[in-house]
Length: 102
Image 1 (tube, one colour):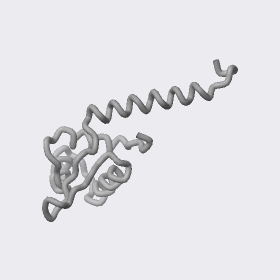
Image 2 (tube, rainbow, N blue to C red):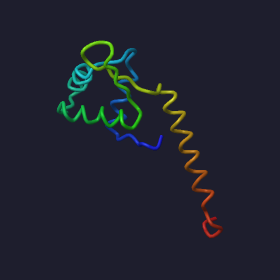
Image 3 (cartoon, one colour):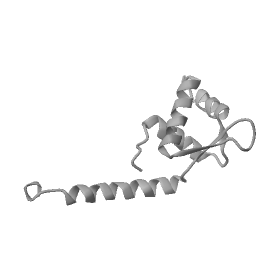
Image 4 (cartoon, rainbow, N blue to C red):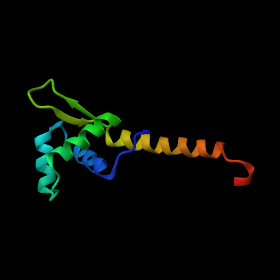
């Protein structure tokens, strides 16, 4: 996962993982407003768009007039990929170390 999530994007992703079905933009706004977030609609829309571009979120407009959002990865898949990416990055860094670094 080379496209790192911001803290807010990860926060949104955690909420989406807690749901059993895809959710609409309106439902996402209601949830975070009830949590006391004062995010504007455009701000949330920007977060969702970035998460789609980064490959963490998908949007489906085939089931009605409104798009529904859902995570691309399950929570378990996300954490497995994250751990693998850390291991690969560490191995890559170690492979490029010179004897002076050891």
